[in-house]
Image (cartoon, rainbow, N blue to C red; front, side, top):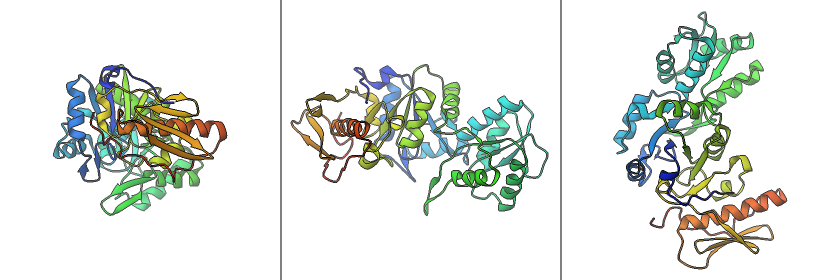
Length: 340
């Protein structure tokens, strides 16, 4: 179930590791209020890191994009799955190791930063590192597939199956990883979320002893936090809506829940069970004949409290019965709509 923090999360944690798409921006536009909420978190003394599974862009490009959106971001605040993959490679093979680089400029730059030598698909190498790269030639994919099946060790930056583009949601690096796995019979070492190397690399680079993962996806951000043994905040500005939230298995459930990044600067109370329902801030939720019911008994709490009681009631039902609640009759407010 959700956790309680009697103090703002900026006091309980000293590092916020922010996923980007769906948390800080959506496509080319900033999430409303994101720049202000990030500035407020920093003003309260919290470190902020921007982390991404996308291995194609170097940190300089990510920081420049954030700056254009009004979000203060230095290059050293950005950590990518390419950097985490390069760290794994350097630890395994040491500086100067020659590695096939099957990806884009961001992956090649990360390997160079780690003191590794990026080579082509047919060159002598001790291993291969792969990442999203829209211009990677198919002939190189084929050559790497044959070499991996023959025994060349393989590190993948991430396994994201989709990636947002200007022309819609497109296949991500995970699609290629899946194809290579099926051809080679080899499962790569994975650096990005939901595996923990990217989060470990973020703490190593940015600092902090009490990190908090902040994301909008249950199956990468929240599961990644659990795999890394850190608490998490789910924000509802991205891909997770009520159907996904109520269906979350225990390993996909966040520590905290908020409509947006404003949740960093507030305290969090967990819902309380009272009889057959869950209550918090004037909101009540219960499950009747498999259907989720949510209503507001008073106007004391925020809209986020409605989502919190809904999650508590739905997860209790899921754990007890193994079935996901029907949400068609549940009416919830816009997440984060109430002023904090």
